[in-house]
Image 1 (cartoon, helix red, strand yellow):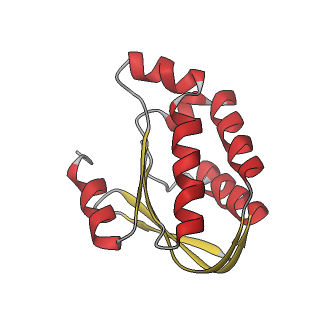
Image 2: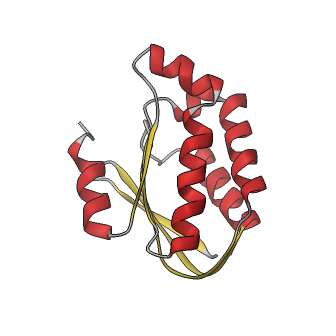
Image 3: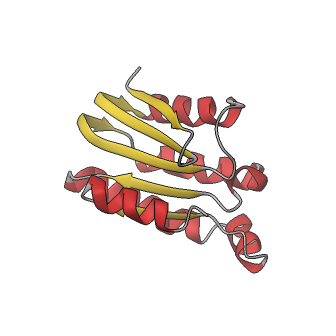
Length: 138
């Protein structure tokens, strides 16, 4: 599987790693897997490492689909934190676009008013992403 994950029970994190070629279908499949996995800590804290990806075949349409998924199930994203490690410019840019799309989605605005808004940040370096994620995981 191009995106695999483990659960860091001690820190309450999902640690996901992309390998090789990652497609939009792979990304959507991964998101479905963690949504259905009863072992995934809630609220979701995901350290999403794409530094081992050699080809990222995910278009903006996939990110729009993901935002639509959030709109259909805002409880699944409430108070979630996602730290994305994307050293490659192309991947970094797509995830920054995703941040902006998600940030302005109506369910996120509603969650923000309740103090339960999800938060996603894109980083170039693993350690910086992990520190950010753990800094507010209490």
